[in-house]
Length: 219
Image (cartoon, rainbow, N blue to C red):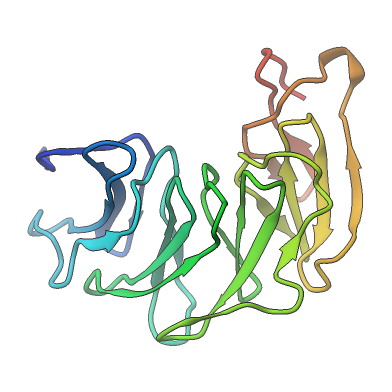
């Protein structure tokens, strides 16, 4: 057993373990200060060579996600509470790029699927970006605005579709390729209509979707 202490930093999100390392985002100081994306080697218990990656704002309540199949080697992505998504190389923790969207706040974690990175925001939009190696790309369209509500829910992707929940109590499904019009957006049951901040989970191969509301219902 071992522990790792990050002096002066707080952790409110989750950790991710991949290929002999643990990844975690932190908040340094007050909420308006920056953050760190730490890549800790599980053998030595030390930071990898170029870790931590400096993040513009603190990481609050989100969890790093790994794209193990990225063409230039596995990448780690994390969203911060203000308006950035940061990418780092898994092998050494080196920061590769950061993407900014002014006015957004990200309390949902990124989702990687089909060559895209998806993240929901507080400006009622679901974004998608592409990792272009040393930088990012914004495909056309890069933002879906039809949710009509804050998205705190981390999206789930399955069979070419992206599923996410909103603070207005909707569950939405949108095609990950055309990214323009939702296939559907519905309130699961009016008797427990309430904000949905949890992430949807799809049971395969049945295709059943599960999530929960802030007032205590699982559907």
